[in-house]
Image 1 (cartoon, rainbow, N blue to C red):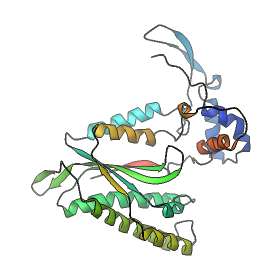
Image 2: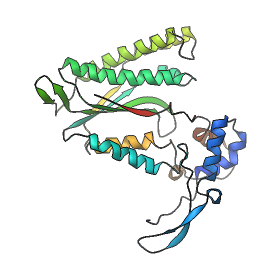
Image 3: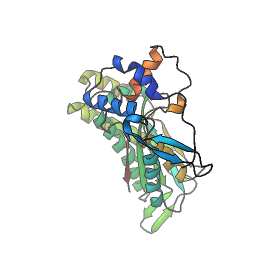
Image 4: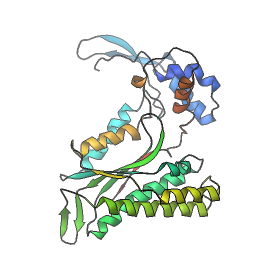
Length: 291
């Protein structure tokens, strides 16, 4: 195996110092134990030899927990490799669907999975219906993201869409542009708000009905942000970018700059980001394909 240096500072170091201040569920406590034991003597190890310089060192085993910032690299690579064979030798477009800040409360409560599903459905249905109005049926790979690199709440979807699709006369190419962005924004706005209103009416969201309708009315007066781009590095780059979020958590050891060991608010926030805000169920992110 190629030799490499281990990060001097790890998320587990911060978590170990502040885990006692966190209120964890049994599932979160289990994930915490895995992260703290990852790549330590508690999980055993094996002797690794560098295939370049012959250097030998003891490599400790990893926990393979999906919440661990040290694990997931293999799953990330395997997921990306599994998607690449499905790509066609044609042009692709990268679409992003975001929501206004007024709708973020819908995606924070215990019933947020229903809101995530509504966002997922609104995104894919928008693409397929607008494409159908142009007489084509494209292929779509959609991935849900729920946060930014700064660990801020930001529900949005990334969609990799074929530059064209099946029509009555065979495959129709759309190399220069996909669909009018104003149409995509309008259709997405209508679909998402309709789905959220239906969830509120059915009592499937953890928000007071009056407050929820107020938020929906505010969002109705705002323009949806739908971004359409042609991936300059090809569709493979979009697949690998999506893999970074579908198989890894928001923060890694390499992103930590310094830590003095004091119980600062930023250190506790880092620990909470890794555990307290990451339930073991995979409702915060995921992927789906449509055609």
